[in-house]
Amino acid sequence: MNETLVLPWHQELWRRMMTLTGQGRLGHAWLLRGPEGVGKNHFARLLAWRWLCTKAQGEETACGQCRGCALLQAGTHPDLFQVSPQSSQWIAVDQIRGLVEFLSLHGQENDRRVIVISPAEVMNANAANSLLKLLEEPPSGVIFLLVAHGWHRLPATIRSRCQPLVFSIPDPDRVQPWLQDQCGDIPAEVLLRQAYGAPLRALAGADPQYQQQRREVFTQFIQVLRDASQDSEVAAAWSQSDPQRLLAWLQSWAMDVVRLRHRIGDIVNDDFREALQEIAGRLHLLKVFQILDSVHERRRWLQQPLNQQLMWEDLFILWRRPGPA
Image 1 (cartoon, rainbow, N blue to C red):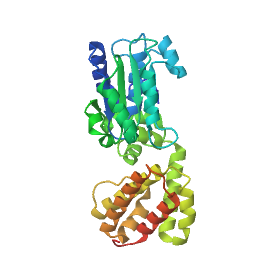
Image 2 (spheres, helix red, strand yellow; image 1 turned 45 degrees about the vertical axis):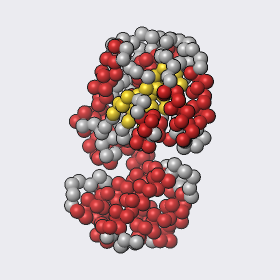
Image 3 (cartoon, rainbow, N blue to C red; image 1 turned 120 degrees about the vertical axis):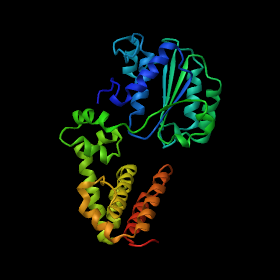
Image 4 (cartoon, rainbow, N blue to C red; image 1 turned 120 degrees about the horizontal axis):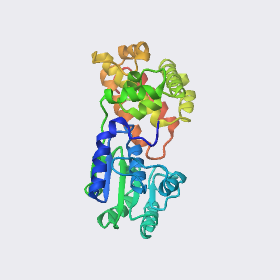
């Protein structure tokens, strides 16, 4: 993916932001909100670079040639400050205090400074309170870009002080030609279906290693459904992988079981249809919804330390029970 180009489904949003830029009506804070995988971070980066570029005009992106762009490419631009989780899954208050120190300095390259916070919803309470004070009395020439997937988890006081920039799942017709150019042999339609329409998640799914892991994990999943003695070994293996990815796959498979039971539309994981049909034939529908609730709950648990081995083993046991608990 070309990091310097506006994505096809972002063109309207880009024109809007460039119009406001030209008119000097940007305000001091924007909340880029929407589902994960639609390109919010990419868009925030393009905005930050465009605003700190000294040559770009109109709807152009950053020129890539000026001194400002050279500093951005080197990661040393003194007027850009980026905040994201470091040693934990949370943005801590010390990171916002570092932002306060940054803002106490005058801009060194031009009159505009840009702050990017992503994902903003993982600020702890103290960090959010510290940021609120900055948003209430922003320094002149500073623009905050808050990127959030779960934007509703941000305090209402912070949301109310940001202008919304809303991203949604784009029309497949806008995405498929671009995605097919990026992903090679796998049909773009298949990748988008597996990613529930999120283009950058679909692009990640085009990686052969991603698809290989997906197939291996599904094979292991079927093994534990058939043989409880495999639980410990498979849970240990899954504990070495990205838990959010694996839980998203489990959620997707459970939703396909619901579709197969109700004969509702196309399933997402058509390559696993035979095995999923077998599961749909033996599981009580209430059990499937119980599984979906459990998977959703565990995705929220991942924001805190937990024993993944036990988490996976509990889920395997839940899947094996044919009726509601």
